[in-house]
Length: 378
Figure 1 (cartoon, rainbow, N blue to C red):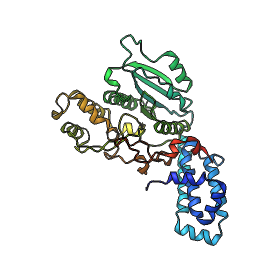
Figure 2 (figure 1 turned 135 degrees about the vertical axis):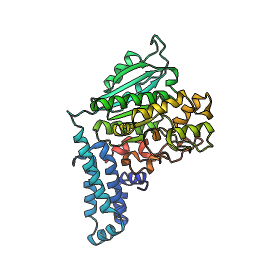
Figure 3 (figure 1 turned 45 degrees about the vertical axis):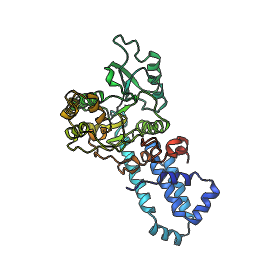
Figure 4 (figure 1 turned 30 degrees about the vertical axis):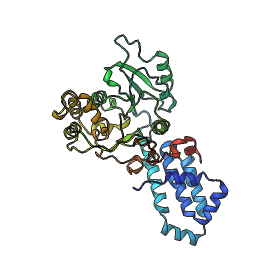
């Protein structure tokens, strides 16, 4: 799929009424496609019921279509993908409805958040709308000390519990926490191997989704993206194998011999993986089980026994893996931008925020991610 013009569509449907009336007269197809596009993007967040906001947008699009002279509309259908857009909306609505029904109680639906903490306040996690039940938060305490004196305070656990998160804390080594506040490679791999092993024994024990998140509150664009993901999980509509939740992309640079040997050993080719940086991602149950626990243990062994070109540079091995988590979970080694990934739902395909390339804003900062209120507007 080509990159969807979500920014432009949102601008059209939120324009003043007099402007929309004029647009409907001068280029009605553009206006109608904008409504259908935004309606589809809202299905995963607000549901497919006819009386829900996505249905209201479609009803408005149909109403506007009836105002177009029939001979003009016939020409527009031949020149614009109006019927395709409407059929796609119906297909996605049916898929979302089926997914929600499959996951409704008493069926098991579980999500697990994983955070590696070093004295950060995790209260920001309570601001998202997590599922009412089946949501857990596992906190790896990297700086709590042997006596646990710096572990997550009881009041923070209470706040997170009120947000629907069942909190568990465990002590972890110092390298569990990176300078960016992410989980280190050792924790990501060891935890994933444990989840896969448990899930192979008892299907219901494996969460539907595992989210690795930073301990410190992320930038606004990342927080908005996570908020949308949490909302879709609460609705039980999300159906993706893997999605990165960060905004920084791997910068183009010359690879070291150590990195090339790590990637060769891990993924079968020495070229640099292209993707989003850090352990900030969501991975689904099927993607987790698509690889055996032995696969993650093999990657874990690279940290203990680095390839020859790395010498004793264990940190270099961990760094090489930090830009390639998508590949570790079965995604293409050259991961497209979310906006260009046709496998993702539309609401996840808004333009990224900071790209990480020398502090530039490439791709452009997203109006949709910047304004949750705008996405909720009908």
